[in-house]
Length: 259
Image (cartoon, rainbow, N blue to C red; front, side, top):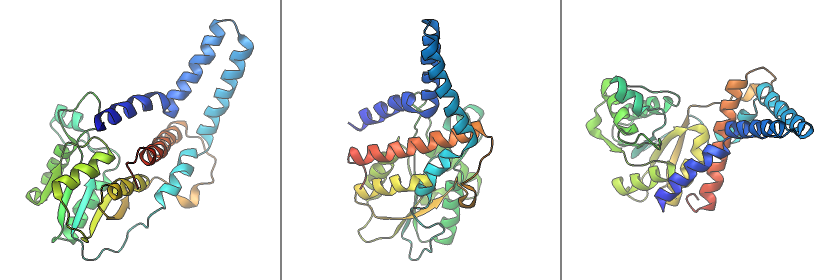
């Protein structure tokens, strides 16, 4: 069932993503022109132009991400930490394997925070969880990239438990718990991107693992949300990210994969 959920969600998102919807909308308008229905085509393409302009001028994606990023406090005070968990997200397994060099992108703050907290709490157990979310390239895992990154930065990876089979947030929580078997009442810190934290905490809650959120990698600027500026590429990227996360939250709640 989890494999069906994984593949189905990937395929559906290919069509439901805002950038895909814009292309589909454009295709509908072009098809109407091809059929000679110029009046309807002008209406469809006119609405499309209006939507593109809105995305280009306003940070709609940041408006949607802001409530997710502020659900939990940033830089929480941590005491008596029994374990630290970092979710994958920045690692690029394909490019790392191809060029034989660690390649990371956005969300590298997860790795940096993991190394920092590991130094600050040497008594804590350490867990890094992440297989691969790519539907076609699944032979090299995010955990493998993270392990190499930590080694190159001088970290003792023998102290880290690497979970490398998970493909999404739900499996991060489920497989990590099966691997670690945390004691009841212990204090585990969870590191992930701020806007991804609500869904992550919900998934860990659902598998019966209470965690302390440590959000990183913030996307929004609270004092600059009400702005008008030109930035189609960046704004569309933020909108796609926000839409995917909100859809993920709803789906996780609906399918019983989050508290």
